[in-house]
Image (cartoon, rainbow, N blue to C red):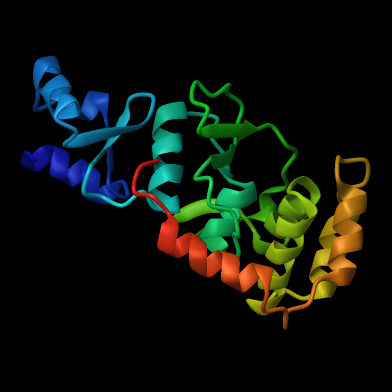
Length: 208
């Protein structure tokens, strides 16, 4: 990779845009590298090298670069990946923003968000742990939602923090499920959550 593009890549969690490529490569050179599968399209107009792992931070940065403003933050299961309590392995990327996604792998939510519910984690802006856990608890199937809550408690969230957060979600889809599962969640649980998370990290494919 040529030097200027390397600098962009290294500042952007391993991704680079078509506009950045064209500073040093022709369109034909870009196409050739894609055809040879040396570079991989992450989202519209954003690429990574095939040897670069598709981490949550990489996918969030790719979403930010692809969408542009008003991209806000990683959310739902992608935020849970960043916080370390995701149990899903579908590699969809969930973000908050105002644009419609062109990719089936990029899910854009237009949820209300208080800036106080955002934080920087692993270099990416994401919903904080309590907001993330409740969002997943509301929207995932019950088994995955409960496993996520178990892991969130294990990693330091308290049931009181979850109760305060879920109270903010009155009228939102899945709130009743979240309330029920917060009562059932157990940081000592060893079954589905830990086993699924371990298997997820073993099986997660490199491609986005």
